[in-house]
Amino acid sequence: MNSKEFSNLLLKNKFLVSDGATGSNLIQRGLERGSSAEHWVLEHPEKIKQLHMDFIDAGAEIILTSTFGASEIRLTQSGLEENFMLINKNAVSLAKEAIKNSNVLVAGSIGPLGQMLKPFGILDFQEAEDQYAKQADILSCSGVDIIVIETQFDLNEAKAAISGVRSVCDIALICSFSFDRGVKTMMGVSPTTFFEEMKEMELSAFGINCGKSLQDNLEALKELADATDAPVWFKPNAGLPKIDAYGNPEYDVSPGKMAENVATWIEAGASIIGGCCGTTPDHLKAISASLKAFI
Image 1 (cartoon, rainbow, N blue to C red):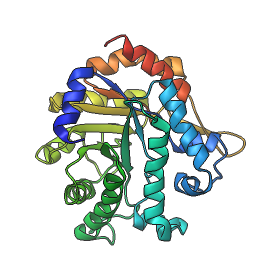
Image 2 (image 1 turned 60 degrees about the vertical axis):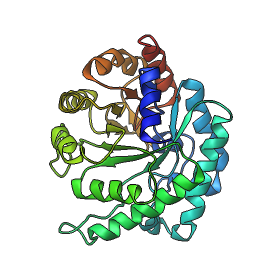
Image 3 (image 1 turned 135 degrees about the vertical axis):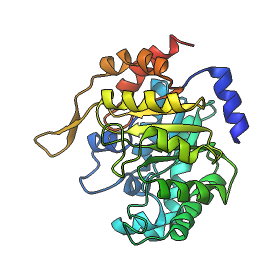
Image 4 (image 1 turned 45 degrees about the vertical axis):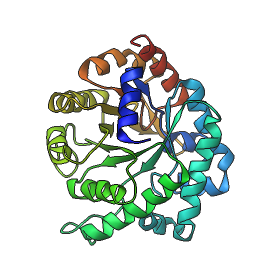
């Protein structure tokens, strides 16, 4: 799907429902502490597929592949680099199996590389661009409908990511930043700066995901929507996590509370709505039901 096709789809549907969290849901389903979704793509593919299906049943019209941490350089941290191609290809296959013959879109998820670019880290721009290009090439060739570069915080890395994707495909592309310092990223990037720096880079939507509280994410959403008329991808956390007795995160925003905020998010400018960390299929079902009232 190219950018024009995605734009036409959004114009036709007015709003789209994305899925919820991957990591926090897999933890609740038994993912071991210190492991990753990419491990389960190989070891428990049925559980990855089931999570996709649960989100689709809850109303998701876009599901993200379990490839957030599946760049070659990031997989070295968990000793999975030799399975780089297999993990990305299998993750797309699992998502496509989950959607069956429906109109649900499969979005290839690409997260940060896990290493900083120079001068704050050791990676140069070209190395980062090459890493993103390698992953995007596998995802696009495996049949994803769109690509989402998500949870970004550094302008240079995001630019390398977009450039890398564009070097291998012309697929519809979304870039989403995490404003985890309120309305700025850990590198001090504001929503306005994000848009101004990326507005010439042929993005299908500008996004906000993860972050901190619902209120902080709302303020970031308002600022971004004020800066652009382009579609806005919005996937906030279900609140802030607290650690339970077993060391697992628990999120304090209920499905009902998330749903109560949908009207406010639409009024603020969100076009594609889902949830990030802590957002379960129950959360998404409530979000979807609330969103359908506006269609």
